[in-house]
Length: 301
Picture 1 (tube, rainbow, N blue to C red):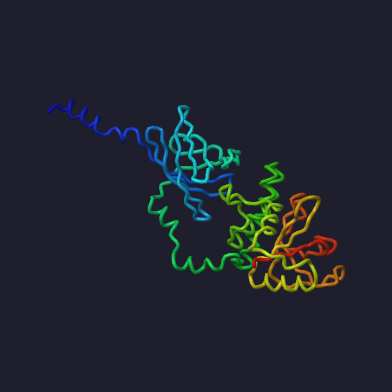
Picture 2: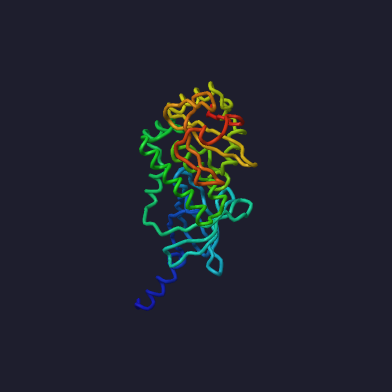
């Protein structure tokens, strides 16, 4: 058999390898939500999966590569990635929800992690399963908590000074709470884990059967709230302001007497969407609001 004939035969018997391409990327949606995607493209048809790193959620992907090079990857919940692969090292574009509304940009870079590492990421060990009962509890030392809050506050202020989408700026409280208390209560399950704004967070806890209002800001309510916070419990404080909700959480510590309120008052961490410079990671409530009127305290049931 001639070499020419042999090469021709091999070429005809392995066309799959000439048209199938494998990709693995990792990066951020809207510079905050970390995602890993892995997929194959064969004859312009795509199939694979994506993993949301923080929630360890894995969703199948199906899609196509269009003539102009655009790769569309649809999740099983209807949300989709739509962008282009650049030199096999980057996948960038726009992220859309199930209704087709643009939710912002994504930028993924090539990753060399294996499928086994994907599986390991999703595997819940015995120790992790045991610690899962501790969700919605404050994690970290006081120093670590302060450092995390300072970082979020710096990002919050930067968001406003650089004229980033105001909607994204108003998600700062939810981002901080989710990280500190390892909860998903303040993420939107319908937008790929996007964080809720302060108003959306308030709407969620008031409508959820998992939350209850401990009471308005009376002496007895704040005493109970401080004790719960000192046990590591997430205690939310909300206050309506010009059609919006100001929302924070009570810090561990000792409530201090306020002659103006005539009661012991806890300190809270709060980000003011309308005035970032008034925001604080640890300030007594009486230095934030003139009176306890209209202030609500919420806890998990």
